[in-house]
Image 1 (tube, rainbow, N blue to C red):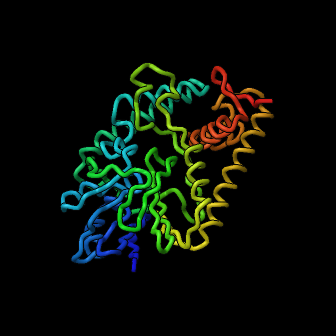
Image 2 (cartoon, rainbow, N blue to C red):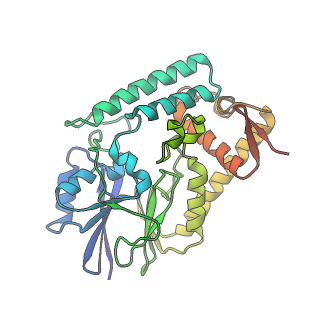
Image 3 (cartoon, rainbow, N blue to C red):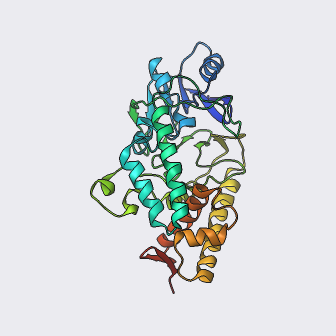
Length: 337
C-alpha cells in the first residue's frame, strides 16, 4: 500500500510517498528560515531514500544541497541542471542573452533602458544570493516566512522520461514551466504529482528563460537560439497528460484535488482562448513588433509588469507560430493567410 504525507512549507507542498519499503520525497522544499526544522519534524526519524525535484526553481529545489548533506541523493531532470548550478542571470552569457532579447522586441529606447537597469540589479542580486548565508527579508507577497535562499548543487541523479523513482513511480518529462520540468505518477492509485505543471485555479505563466543548451549564444546565433519556447512545450505537456487517467493530483502549490481531467481541460482551453485573443489583436494591428502587441493588449500594465506581460504574449506568439497561424519576419508578426 502506498501512502502520501503532505508537508506544507509556506506556499509550497512537499510530499513524502511511502511504498514498497521505500520513502520518496517529491520536491526538496524551499529554503527559508525554519523550513529545514519543519521538514525534519514532519518526517520524524525516517529520512527519504531519494528526493526528486520536479524542476529547478528555488522554491522546489532550494534545499537540494541540504538533503545531500544528510546523505540523501537528489534527482533532477538534466535539462534543469543549469538552474541548480546557480541563479538566473548570474552567468554572463545569460545576462547578455536577456539583454539582447530586450533590445530585439521593438520597445522604445526609454523602456529598454529601464528594463536593462532592472536586469543589472537582478544580476547583481543573483550573484550575491549565490553566496548568501543569511536569509533575505520576506518578499512582498508573504508566501514564505522569510525570503528564499538557493545553495547551488550538483544533482546525484539525472532523471529522464520513463525512469522510475520508485517501484510504481514513473517520471514523465513535462517541459515548459522549465526546460526539465517533470511529473510523477503513482501507477497503482493513478496519482499525479504535478509540481508546477498542473495547479488548482491557476495556469502557470510561461517565462522568458534559457534552454539547457547555450550553443546558440556561444556560436553567435540569433537571440531566439538561446530561448526556450516555453508555452508550446507547456501546452504539449498538458496535452500528453490529457490522454492519461488520474484519480487525484498532488500539486506543488495549493490543495490536492480529484477532478484532474477537468482541470487539465480548463488549462488547455484557457491557453487556446488566449492564443485566439492574441491572433485577433494581430489581425487588428497589422504587423506589430512584440512590444507593440503587448502595448495593445495591456496598455496600462505593461511598464509595471513588463516581464510577466512580455512572457505571456511571447508564449502565445510562439504557439501561434508553431501552429502555422503566424510568421515572424524582421521582428514583426503577421497572420498567415
